[in-house]
Amino acid sequence: MVKIPVFLVVMLCLAAAIVHAENISIDPKAPAYHNARFGFSLSWLPGNYTVFEADNGDGITVTDGKGFTMLAYADLEPRIGDISREDFFNRVNGKAQAAYKRINKQQGWYAISYVEDGNIIYTKQFYHNDHWPTLHFTYPQSMKKQYDQLVNSAVSSFRPF
Image (cartoon, rainbow, N blue to C red):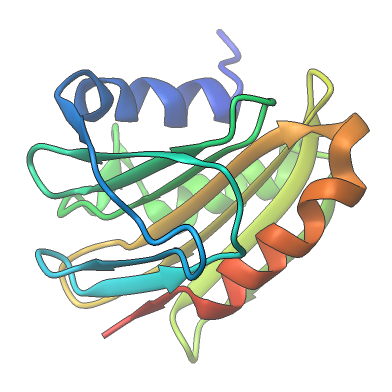
């Protein structure tokens, strides 16, 4: 069986959206994003970021040039390959040495965080009607203290509507 790291799967899925992306202007003093196509929003701490929005309106990619990447997007496809999203989470949940794992079926979301190849990976995904708002972070484990507050701020504000 071929093992594909979760980070690689997510990055490959988003590669097409990033290729056809445009740089958008975000207020550096109060960075926030509202996705009208899929109905989700979030905000994050001020800083020096480059923000790209996918041409198709799926979401954004936020980077800081120091190893931090935040992806906020949604899609209509409720399956990855031939497995459901919940089965996918359960597969990841069983294999990853996760620092944090949680499913909240009542509110319709899951979150998982783990270290892979020296990077902290954190994903939170909502099961919302017919689409799947997702917030995904990657940053060097060595910069955990620098980025944890930023991640916590964005995660706590991330909501479908």
